[in-house]
Length: 210
Image 1: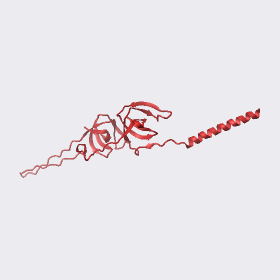
Image 2 (image 1 turned 90 degrees about the horizontal axis):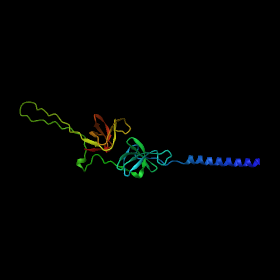
Image 3 (image 1 turned 30 degrees about the vertical axis):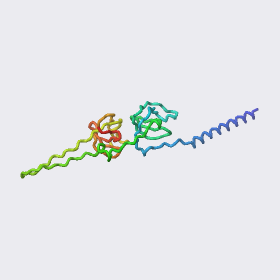
Image 4 (image 1 turned 30 degrees about the horizontal axis):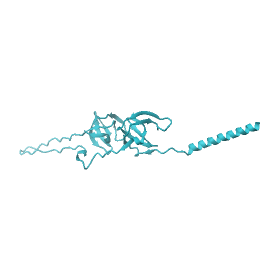
């Protein structure tokens, strides 16, 4: 009888060890689907094409939490793509939405050669004009005047930053409908602007001409 009980205990111990070893091997060799970085750390603009839920954590994960609803037509910043979801930044809240509910929007270049009204050029100075004088006095040049700087409106809430980089210091928040003054076109992503006495850089894709 004792031998029978001993044999049963050995069989149970062997079964447990085999199952445990399979679990260890499975967790060792299984890998999660890779995370696709969209464009080398540069944020892209996405448009919500259908009302979506912003999840904190991947929705198919064990600790996922539905945070808020995002209405159709809202613009968001897309950071990464992972397992059928986009990781986005919506008003400084980072979470996940279903990929089929977001459309990546490619901003149009600031300068268009075929549309004179859309052409944006840096402000230029008016050359001094010398008045003709028939007397013996020295001609007096007129004081040059600067071309008025363009005014633009914020289309999506964003940040005014201390440098043309999304990781630089935030000087202030630019609200939707806020008016900024164009100062300089730094590159195809960033413009130097002034808002309420503060000068910094904002994303040109989120600004439109008044």
